[in-house]
Image (cartoon, rainbow, N blue to C red; front, top):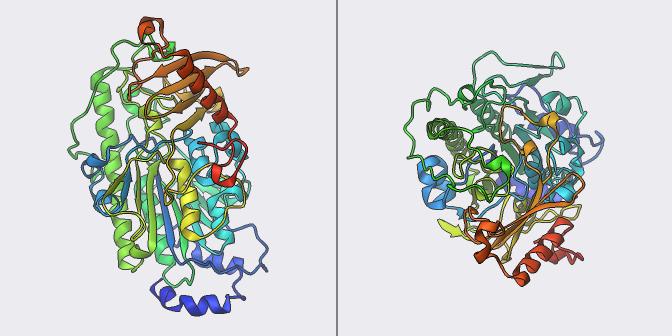
Length: 506
């Protein structure tokens, strides 16, 4: 890769007319992985040369509880040393669709669920690969690679056999919810297999990522890498609460963790029935918190190794890095365990960004950016234009949201795990408009009719002022009408004000 820096000017002047898509796919496949997805373009199609030589790395964790910027060094010390201390931490980052597949689709397409075609988990196959940031970068001449978890319900066989297009030139995606029993693709047998070498999924994903980075050493092109770690997600195949704990690697299995914060909502009568009953005891949440934190330490170890690998290759100062989660996760903060609801523990996510000279070192950015804005920022950084309408904003701009819009569509039983007592499948479809001053939520029935409204002024959203018990603090008709208007616009929004769309997204 260092050679690429030296040769960049001459490479661009001659445009590499002879570079063919299939040849590049061979050189960019992860050397340590069992297989690689090849692009769908014609073998005789010459690839353009990117106008930028900036690499991009996006790291996504699964169900990662939001971490205050000041606390990152306690939960992700190696990651914090670079991305937090020398990069930018976005304190008020959110997920516009706080469930796995819709949120990941939002990251890839830079669109709300009602525009990307994937508002539910079961809609993952409806995501148009041509509308993803990885596809745009592939078309612009980047070497693109993805590893780890892709989208819910899509297996490595779906990807490698070509049943599902991802937009990546090469990939090592795997499918499963278990820390060890994940299914990979074998090129020789043309089938999935489960490795029996005892390598943890977090370690495997990190190894694949660094193998790809090493394979790019002699490439004359910049790369885009997407690494999606399963941790700290629980084991979905578990048969009881006690066995669904995430499992850390031996290196962190007994590691001490920061104190557990437990402050459940005392009066839940202002919430939906699904949230009025506590799932488990404080001791259970304590054990789950400990297991999740240790699993996250595993991710931190892989981040440390990857950052070191980029440094050793001389590429760290030429690589933009984004670290985030698809959504947050309740751990008894409100008295229940779940995701996919509109409350802060689910909608708020960690977000760190590293890019020398562009993001301010050690800066805490309080603007309301989030998962949907990573794609627009990458487009801005690389100079690549999206080929479709996007709903997010570049974090490099001076843009400031006055409010955020979020939504989740109720999932069907097919992808709902019955052991996850408060899974998104049990939560009605909802949408929310949230500002610094208030949060307004509406829940809907199967026909889209409003079932219930909630209004909050407290940051933790524990006090629904539309509940009769808080009648004296109910918002005025004018404020409520404004909130409903903003929410209604969000439900059909498309594009941004920069694109001059009729109803831009917040």
